[in-house]
Length: 188
Ligand SMILES: [Zn+2]
Image (cartoon, rainbow, N blue to C red):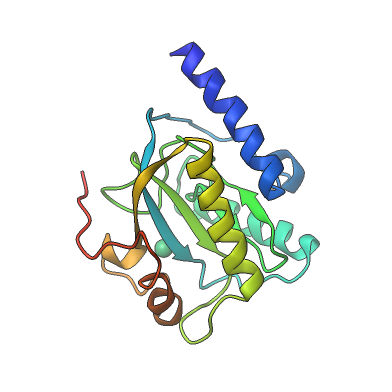
């Protein structure tokens, strides 16, 4: 197990180099109250929007958004950490949440078998920018290339896991056109 964790760590670093990942240290994340890992290639990608906070356009504002979300999830929801695995900022950067192969708090039935990616902002009527969509697509592709995400992974929107408007009507109508989207996911 130790060796496997080491490999995953190295792969995480490679992915972060490819995708200009903003690490937890870089956005000033608080220490997680609990970390639970799951092993193996990740079979699901779950897409979210934050709704609030609104889209952030500068790295400074995106760092503030990440801190806001983490505070909300830890202090109001009582969770051990920010719920999502990663976030996409309006600055086109990927922000590290719980990270790879860490059990999340974002989609019931999928938290121990997915990477949860949230687009920062409200995408009920507007699409995320091309820069944001490209960052997410490239990040998922890099995850597959490095073996962290299963090559035959399935992609869903949060609303397919529970009754919620997330990831917003407009963004949901976009992701259902993506290659790996599935209409019939299988939760735990
Ligand atoms: Zn969501």
